[in-house]
Length: 381
Ligand SMILES: [Ca+2]
Ligand SMILES: [Ca+2]
Ligand SMILES: [Ca+2]
Image 1 (cartoon, rainbow, N blue to C red):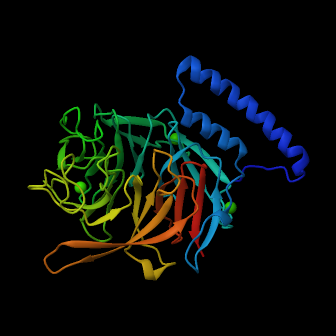
Image 2 (cartoon, protein in one colour):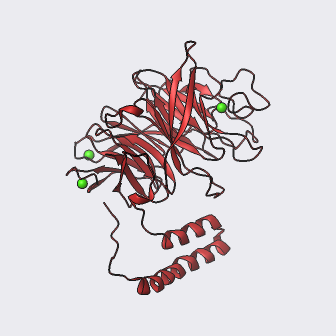
């Protein structure tokens, strides 16, 4: 699905048209700013959106041997990706929809799009258990079920409710090999400046019906994504470091063990910070303020070299610094004889607007959602 673009418009008539559109967008935004307090980042984003050319596969830089394609476009701030047991790619949009996309003719572009569900509250995580789709959203987790098999959910049941949602909210979720529901829960503040509430900044666990909800691990400021290392019950999670200085607080990849304390708010990285007693170090670190979010372990057959490597999306800084993040990195993980893990981080792909989630398709390709451009890229062969 590609956004139609007129190829007949020459530069001579395109530019006045763009400027006209710019006025149409910028004027109400500017009035809104003064009247309603709309923020400047929103306005500049709207202007960039009008002027920016449509995203293209050639924008993306990848290692030799990887072919990039625009698999789908026109998504509305896509946050989370997962393939369903039916082979469709399910995409959560920040606006509250879950779309189900499919490439039926194997040309590496989706031409089928169905609205599977709508009305969710800022969904950031998707996970299947059999044909049930669990959605991590603002304040909790909802289970979606397609009862009549027409490809559209007709039952939405709230499984977990009332989770903290202030600076951060409920993030991604994962179903463990034990069949339980693991939930990434963000913090209510940047660095604990308003105190630390029960359940915030943690990895939670519950039965799939929501019973037995409890803290599995703590001290994770904003654990955006969770993934089990292939073939094991070892759970890994990304974590965003604090926004406000002191500098030197990296984003992290952590091995999450039951009862573990991962440091927030007083400790970060590998034992840095004023309050590290009893906390566990990260396995790998990423650029400060990069907002390291989507995480997947590569389990496909297309790229045997990278099997079991972690791939992470660095969304980019909320300060707008263009030199931070907006890339995908690859992490090679090794386990020492004492059971501890170390991760070595490599650059993998760049040129994105705001890469947010990444998953592996049944075809062995990597699929990346670009929150900023609404594009899903296929990185395959
Ligand atoms: Ca197709
Ligand atoms: Ca249905
Ligand atoms: Ca930490």
